[in-house]
Image (cartoon, rainbow, N blue to C red; front, side, top):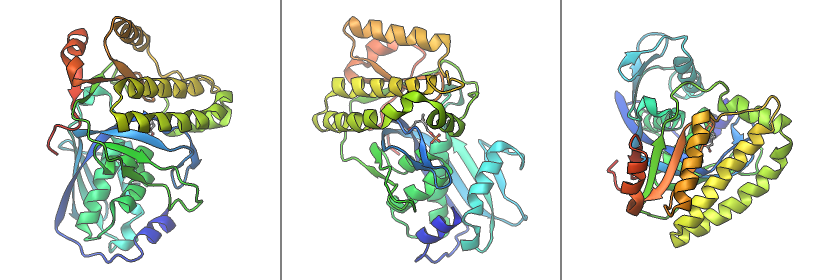
Length: 332
Ligand code: PMV
């Protein structure tokens, strides 16, 4: 990983500022990333496509720390050096220290994603950290390079460098230099996402282990690359034509196909709770009754509803507890 960072920072000179702050949005994949071709460089087996969540995400402030260790804060509370959160950030910063005078940092992370929403914050967290580093060190990296650096922290963080619809290209090269995200030039102001929280409990199997287990043991995984290839084509077409039915149908199919590969892993990965299944049936019934409502779901029990502005009041009366996000109409 250090070699990869060195390559990206090859022509950069570092000139430290006192402090730097950056924001990155969280994102939800409509075509999922599931499986790594290189776990070290965090290279995916398949490309993915997401929508960033507007002003919901992570704000990170970085400054040099005079102690001989990093000081990591999360939402106003200093974290124990041995906590999983602090360790993950410090290990990520280790990749950069030789380019930064071997500095240690005070990192203040603020997530405005409601913690009860059970949304992963690692994507926006690593993206915001990389953006803050770029600013703090006075580098002039392209967004493409920043997305590759964010990828080293968490795969989906590559997409959080951008707003709106984003594609992360899996790439083919062994050195990982062609695996980056880029924005898709589509603005869809009526697009809505609803976070339906089923549980905010930490998941039993994280995405790294889940992907590993699926690629190593699931007999259904061999069908996944062609599923993704078809779904990406359909999603691009849907985005070009603002065809919501095609987009919703494809995103829902893609998420359930990913869960099918997980269910066929050994031991099986079952991220659904009974309540997840109950709500999926409700969504299907509402759709049968004429509501243009779809969902997607990641490696956890929570549902992310997909709909448009026109359906917002009907969707909110069916799901009063929903957190609604308008990714194109918030100032960030
Ligand atoms: O970026 P990671 O390692 O947290 O993996 C994300 C995996 C999914 O959320 C299930 C899919 C995706 O593309 O975001």
